[in-house]
Length: 231
Image 1 (tube, one colour):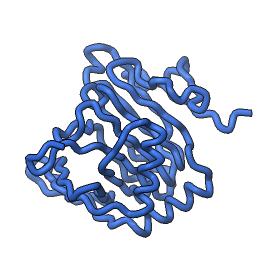
Image 2 (cartoon, rainbow, N blue to C red; image 1 turned 30 degrees about the vertical axis):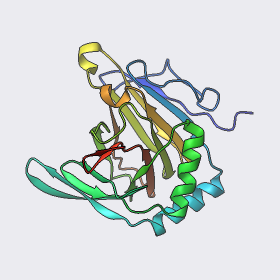
Image 3 (cartoon, helix red, strand yellow; image 1 turned 135 degrees about the horizontal axis):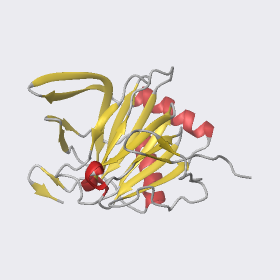
């Protein structure tokens, strides 16, 4: 009996779904979801429903959430989406011209980091968390390619709460006719991006008008440079 069946779809550049590629990620957890130039593995649900509900409630109520800030085209923008940054040291992390400093780990985050490390075979020293209150909140296409991150290092992404669609688009999609990759990130699931993924691919969490509850996403990362010190 298959516990669940999820489809990962390749979309054409025109946005039309191509049904030829369907995969059960529970049967093939080590299958690369990208057609080239990177590696993305989806482990599916790694926690029970009860465990996932517990972690969602804990993260919503114990994390020091703050509205995210960015400077775009000279404008200071404060998002509805909230973020938090934790790590082994008070790392500074700058993106969209906004700098954050890591807080000390909570016990829950340490437990989840251990699980991520065991599943992915990589070590992490920091975690960026995002809180999406509803489907109307999303994230534009971007790459996690900041210079303070380990080059081609793994980024482990855990999701709790509302199931959301997640997209990957190659940076040279039009020139090379590379299709967009789409999958659903489930409550209590784990995805890892590694290798040359951040150099060659963008990823996005598109907003949706469908009624949805909150979603918490954790991305465990490895910082290798901070305050002009390389570790």
